[in-house]
Length: 242
Image (cartoon, rainbow, N blue to C red; front, side):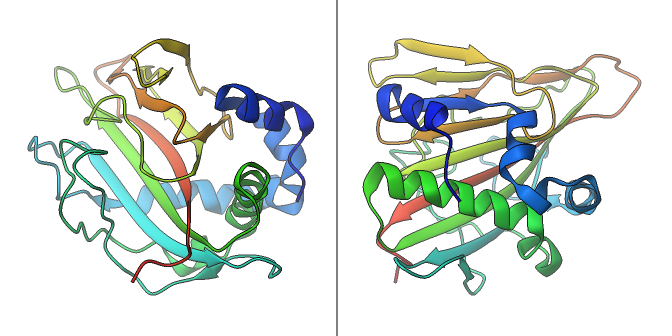
């Protein structure tokens, strides 16, 4: 898969880019078709509560999977289920420990929409950093909010993920206010602030160059369920860690 020149130039030039949902549909081929997307989106209703929130919050649900990609070999190979680890320098709230989250369902990990987005992100990673072995993590997130109990998509604040490339794709915003994506440099200068609003609206990040975060979310109508569903994919050079 080839990334369009515009987004690639944006990431290469300033460290981030935005791709609209409509553009993503065009890039994803069969994976962007409605009959493929519907069951993919529905899988967010089956995420499990994140039990590793040191702030005591129960507002986040998630599943994860990991993959590897090798130069000259198409596609991504799913790895055995393993914990997610971030150094404290990258996640001051929850870093420094192995966090075991529920595994991504097999049908989701192999579905056409996810495969298409993995290929898109790998094309970006290869373009920015050269074709090489990649260790890839896929995170399904749901952030829930209620009256008087906001949700925090990035409770650790504006941060680096400690990887090379990050792809963040909106799945759904349901009865939601807030949730603005913030992009900053290491000196705290605000480079951009925008809302991923429509399904498949995507942010592409060169993680070593820019930090990112998301503002808190709250319900528009306090009487109705409120949540923010996103997919986060990351590429880290070097292949699978030991």
